[in-house]
Image (cartoon, rainbow, N blue to C red; front, side, top):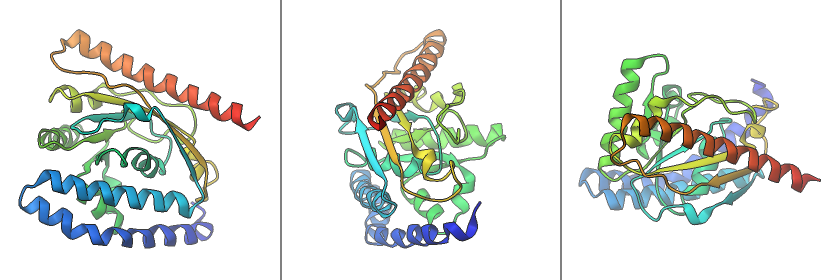
Length: 252
C-alpha cells in the first residue's frame, strides 16, 4: 500500500463517518424496542447520505442500470461480484435510495476503527475465511436477520478479484437465500477496482452497477438449487461483460 499518497483519502473517509452520528441513536433505540421497520429506516438514510458523500469526495461517477429491478422492500439477498474495496460504497449508493441492507463481509473489516462498528451497526455479518465452522455460523446469523426482515448482500467469490475478471462463485453463499426462501437479486458491478486496486492509490473512478430481475428460491430441490446457483453466476458475469462493453463504447 502506498501509505503517504493515501493519507489524505483515508482522512476524508474517516471524517465522513461523522455524518452517521445523528442516525446512531435512532438505530440503537429502534433496535432496543425491536422496531425493525424504524431501524431499517434509519439505516437506509445513514447509508444513502454516507455512500453518496464518499462518491462525491473522490469525484467518482456512479451509473445504475436496471433501477426498476430494485425491490421496494425486503427481505432479499443481493448476490454480486467483488472487484475491490470500493464495492461496499458503490453498492450502498446504488441500492440505499430504495432500501436498507447490509453485508456478509470478511472479519478483517470489523477490526477497522470506526468503520467496523458502523458495518456491524447496519446489521452486517462478519465471516472468517478458511474456517468452515465459523462460516456456517455466520450464514446462520445472516438467516436470523433475514427472518426479521433485514436484507443482506453476499459476494460468492469470497474475495476481491482486484480487476475486471470475476472469480468462481462458491455455492455455500446461496444458502443465505435458499434456506429462508427469499428472493435473490443478482447485481453486476464494474470499475470499482479503479478506485484503489489498479494503482494502490485511492482516487475517483466511473463505476457501473447493473441490477437484474429477482430470482425466486422457494421450494427448490437440490438439483434446482444447483441450477439456480449456476444461472445466477452466469447472470452476474454476463452483466459484468455488458457493463465493460458499455464503458468501452462510451470511451471511444
